[in-house]
Amino acid sequence: EHNCKTAIMSYRRFFLLVGSCCLLFVSACQTYTKPKGKKLIVCTTGYVADIVKNICGDSVEVLALMGPGVDPHLYKAGLQDVDLLSQADLIVYSGLHLEGKMSDILHKVGKWRPTICIADGLQQQDKISWNGAPGVDDPHFWFDPLLWKKGTEHFTRKYNQLHWEDSVATNSNCREYGEMLLQIHQYAQDRFN
Image (cartoon, rainbow, N blue to C red; front, side, top):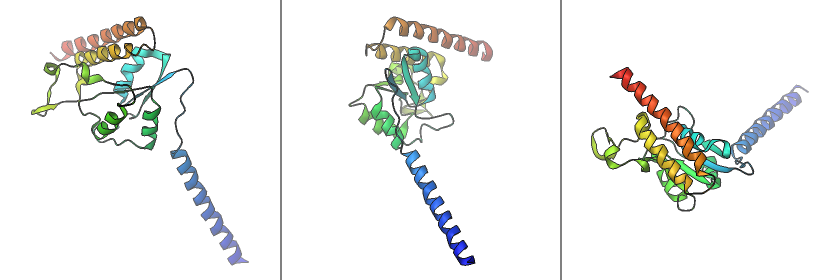
């Protein structure tokens, strides 16, 4: 009788373990379902998602692939990320190789989905060389509110070209966001100079 109870307990543990593994696998493979009536904009980082949310407001669904504390240089897109990118109506990314390991995916998806690269709003003279290496631009331009403002204005122009909504609202939001960035810049100038 003791061996029978031990065998039953072993089977229960085994099936509990197998069942738990199956649940984890199924939950990891679930796909995102877009809300009806809203465009889905997938952003690579929270910084980029902040621009999109401030310019577009609640008229669109905005998702960031990378959460706080994730190093975008080392980030590798998983199956859920590829699923989100394939469902996106628009993909927005920082650029200048910030999303290093995702560059190939962003380039490929950009052939059949609209994409906006925030860094495309910068002129060559705006860019800072990375660690003094000629021809390699520093991708951390959001640290400079004036450069981030240029990227925001570029996003707004490109977004308005999609004609998804009234450009008056997005242009107004862009001016408001730009004013906030100018205030941040002025604060930093006053504080650190």
